[in-house]
Image 1 (tube, rainbow over the protein chains, first blue to last red):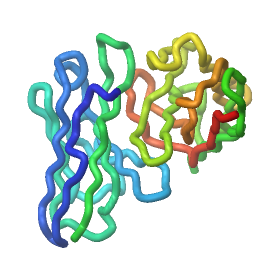
Image 2: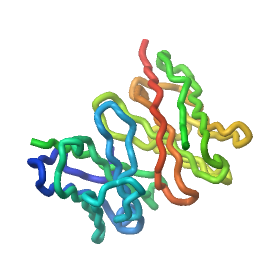
Image 3: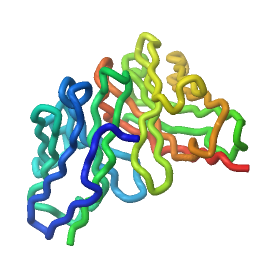
Image 4: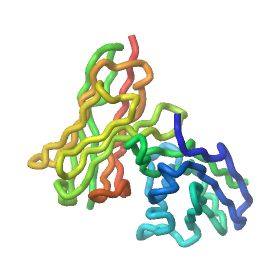
Length: 110
Length: 118
């Protein structure tokens, strides 16, 4: 059972902006960096955002991350069909001494 | 080019054991923490375990005491020994590389399927 809560789904039309929330607690998001992963259908997850708001080389600047208190958000601007995927937030939990993933959000491009 | 290739997945009976391997190439294996993450069919990602560069290990509550993570730097290999397997352990198991001391999983393997069933 995940300790990071995400909405199960989000959607938008091409070009729109979509935001995904990730809610945690003081022992995980509140005290540690947040990471975001993208999983395209049938493939392994890919690192999308690290250290709350940093993009690895090759990730378009349409993707942005933010964190405030015990919550974090991933925004996708200029939504494209290839953004249809599952998105997961993650953070280390100091109380449990485990890495926790969010429940995951399926993004659909209408 | 960084590559992670998992192997060892199989069909195993409940209560049985299995050892997964992850062969790494294209980077200095000994300088990175290594993680195992699993995903049941149609479900979300579930973190399993991590081993640090110094051999320190952490486990999720659901596998602690049953699974053992290890690494062999001379062979650029990561392992996951899984004992007392249960139906709930059925999943695709991914190995992933992470920067030392930071759970930044920047490269993932393609996964290997473990099925626990009688």
